Length: 398
Ligand SMILES: Nc1nc2c(ncn2[C@@H]2O[C@H](COP(=O)(O)OP(=O)(O)OP(=O)(O)O)[C@@H](O)[C@H]2O)c(=O)[nH]1
Ligand SMILES: [Mg+2]
Image 1 (cartoon, rainbow, N blue to C red):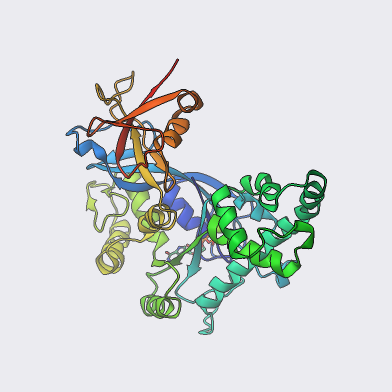
Image 2: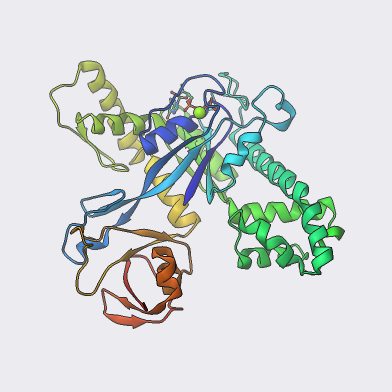
């Protein structure tokens, strides 16, 4: 699972990334602070299944606190995107390649309206977040269109010599982008291109196809950042009314970063995503205390959390509809090192027991015999559809 963080320059992408991963990367109040992509690991939350078994798990990856399991996901933070017209002035948009593998994107916008599309600080009331959102979609679509266009000649030549169906001809290339057969089939049908030879596609048809592929392979949700700046909440409300079909969640990445850093330093006790924290160290100066109390009063009390964790959870569990499955045994839940429920896997929607077996090990998939639902002890066939918080034992041959 890879989540890409995108947006115009100076909106707080890297702050959001840092708050999610606690990696030490540069944040600054000017455009193009980030040039090379930052890659790190963040976490999404799920009610852990360990409480069902009345045990405390020991995750090998991620962590579990108060029976909330934090499951790792890869996060990429890229340079700020600028409109194509400005390409010469920005970094160009070639770095988008870093996002090729991403399953979904979080677009960070500055809901305070104090930075423009190029990331410059302005007090211009015209800074319109809806335009910023439309611009990004346009940039991503243009980028994908360019990639498809570049490869289409080669793929359609192959189609001509091998006389393959359009879907078959496209699949290898699309597969590298994470497009499944099923999704490709749906998009081709929707665009009425399933029976059309690739060499006959017009640019307009390719554009339409690209847009639809992007929607399925790179769904976007909006992180409306800098919610702590006065006046931002009203702007967020207006934006949600204007774009009712978009998933838009307000956040204050800076506050989340401050809380996580203070937690790591042992100054406070803070659970990512919580609506409060406790100061646990005497070694805190007045300035730090004031900053933390500001966050408590003006962010956590007002909005119930900093929003960062909610955004990560939302993109994985609501937008992508992934769910959690644990490997386990009917006789014991621990691995050979004594770790209880050591692993938790994020599975895509409609995953079966066989998909899960392959996820654990190719050999388990190839030699699959049956599976057991550890909670109910029921036997499951290979096509059984899994659900959130299933604990599954795979029985395989050899
Ligand atoms: N008030 C406020 N400022 C924030 C918040 N998040 C980030 N900032 C500030 O916004 C500025 C830009 O932050 P970055 O994280 O470097 O932004 P970016 O989008 O990665 O910028 P580029 O890499 O230059 O595209 C910095 O001055 C941050 O301190 C927030 O939640 N609230
Ligand atoms: Mg940055």
